[in-house]
Length: 195
Image 1 (cartoon, rainbow, N blue to C red):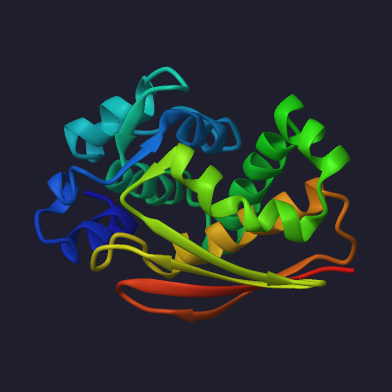
Image 2: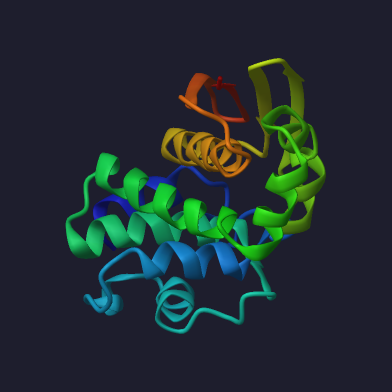
């Protein structure tokens, strides 16, 4: 098994089978995969992960969150993508998602702060089991993610921060920054600022 995937799965209590009640919509996996090269030696991956990467379920299907996170590491391993490049690719995938008709309609009527305040609700529409708490005020918000041990490593926390940045940019936020303030085994805190 490739290095990054192996390192991720080693920290989980049951590897790829960990936290089966924690799910994510396949649309996020599909968006990320669209930003990465295709192919690679999928036989190096655990069979269930190889299958989900080779043939992602329909966008509305729920998939294990562990498989979604592991797929990011699989792309890094199979295509020699470093962490910063992977983050750029996931940011582009998030920006495309927030460029959808639904987000554009919301952005016309909602400020960045209002959109972020609604992020906890919308997060629940695409993630099951990982909680998000949002505290927003003018020009700034702090978001806290909570999850089981090691489900989200630091790379996943940084990727989520960039997803929040994409939400604020979709709401016409200017000069948007997203910074991971803390990243631990069971939670992360992210600060998003805008003008």
